[in-house]
Image (cartoon, rainbow, N blue to C red; front, side, top):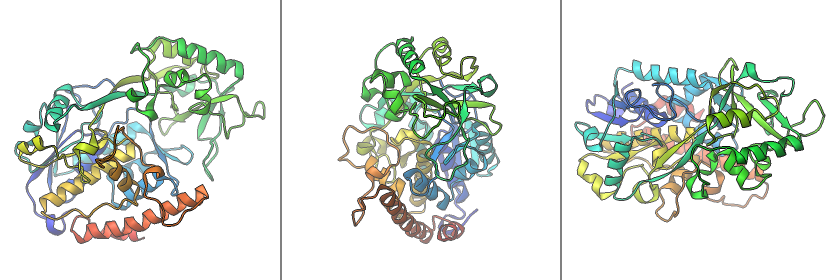
Length: 471
């Protein structure tokens, strides 16, 4: 597609990283008639957690969170749909049952995203490591860095030098995946919770008695870890804390977190279990299941021993053990502007504008990464067209997140998901939480319509996307 003021451009944009943000950015830029050089270091340089060389591989959960329109995650999905996100469209095509959440068959998702990139006539997918920003910038009109939380050591060091300060790092973790045919379906039961109107049975539930829970927690805390130290809160992103670290905060902490039994009834007893682990299908065939909320730093043998203490998982076979790894991000409030442009003075020496997208930009979450890639793409397109990028309303989900993440007054910054807590207050106070969330969503939808119109008037979006938003 070529349209508006961008039609006929022959300059190219370099994008580093073919994860969620980089893949979305590449497809968005190329769709506007601008050539893209998309650089991905895998498989030449592997990472501790990726298992394929596919673009947009999901390495933690396969869930993209809630689809409820009156949730912040649901608002974000509506924004992605209205802006014509490629990856959101693929996610819907590759969806697997997950109650009111959008979960995907991660292999099918990555295959389809990779196919779209490889087939696009204006995208050149290059399989090599980019050791420096200067080399990546050479010959390009703009650079988007979307190398993610596992940016190579060489590039991370180079980026830190340009950023004028030390890049920040903390630890992230991924949950294990078990084979479905190794689970004891006599102990497990199917039931969803908290998903109004959702089909019951999207999750498997492993119910604990009090005695089973107490024994499990004792063994979990005593188990051998890969990184042999207790983590301080600042070391760990809160949404991805290892289950054993949660247990260290208090014996019952997991029962009020990943193992909460609220909303569940064990059909064998007719009562709510003392605690319960939920398992979510990993693929469309339901051959593998993810242990929801069970990110871990335990050694592989200990994962097998301890997690087999979970009722129904006594003979569990692991398709993938949980892993813990470094997670790198920039101090966005001091380094990025509202267009995700790297504003550090040293970056000016590169001679072209540099934008940061994805988790490296200091936002957290799959959909947030996709949306940041789309936003960076629009910022690049506006720069090439020498036109201002319309400001993103803070009433939208990503607008609120971006405002928080790039506000110089934000201190002790940690990556954050979209949430209602960072949105500007409503004009009138709404006491009822459900009504308040619905009001946030309605206000955001109205702001989104105006934003899409502004983009279209600036020549940065096809009219078809505006029409879809209006509908």
